[in-house]
Image (cartoon, rainbow, N blue to C red; front, top):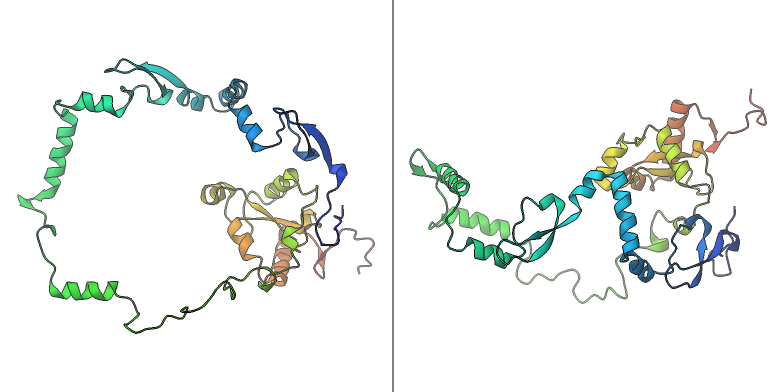
Length: 304
């Protein structure tokens, strides 16, 4: 599907992909993309917050937590307890019912005032005191002591800057609003005619992405990082990279799995990386390429 543009170069909305829907809270009609239709649709974030505060939504969340992670439901379910001092009821998470005994810090301080220390705390204090003393002598510290003049001179050299008195900085009397130093837009060396703003096609969906990840054994083919480690480091799954940098070419021969770090490195020196990934996929999966393009129909090409 080719996307149309207006005179200013902006993308025109295709009415076939949209559908009129009523808001679940305020009953207001609005347009929503067909691929984003859910059971409960909301026109704004305010309507969503109103619905999330109702008892119906809370019940649905509890039922989902029970099915998915029952241990989380037991720990994150609140229970009513009574304070040992003021005898007031208060709610606590189920995982902290054996620890909490007071409703506030004021009640805790009332409980602690005039009460001797427990035996466990006294043992810890004695162990710390033994560590501070070695063979009957206290470990030396800098308390009530002065530095030597040699160390003071070294500290001055470390903390001193490379500027001397009378030095004029390079950015004095310069207006960066007229001459901005930050490079953006067409001035960047990786500029590709605003290709990052172009939308992806409907075929480039989560099912296709998961197929590419499973084909590459859930690993980055450039650095070999596993998807589980990628989620721990970057809190996201592996990215799907287009080898020829064209979003409309959605073929398994033209896509590969990369981590977010390698995906950023690949944006520079693009002709080199296209050759690199095409040669790598041809060795692993026996894909065939010719002049940087994918070969699909072998019979149409008069090969020897």
